[in-house]
Image (cartoon, rainbow, N blue to C red):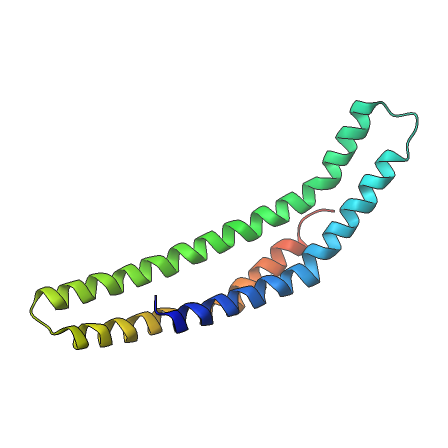
Length: 138
């Protein structure tokens, strides 16, 4: 992917992830640490019971992180498939005798279109992630 397109995509995704972290994940981390501290404040519990309590406290955050990771992997796979399609079109064009500048131009337009399409998917992906994060039992 051309550097400018890659930088644009990276900035958009980083902005989304930072928003999710600030508005959702960070709160979950706070609850996890508070919950874990409460587990340690129970002197009558065995070491095993405290450990199990702490694991229960960590579960919602682990689910949230898994959810975000999975969604980002699917997004990346879709973007990769789109750019691979561009590569195939460019190779076919080159194999049919087109000159390098024309092939480069096709690639630039095609990859730019992939980036535009996927940047436009970010708001709906963000909305879906927020809904799913909000539905994780605490």
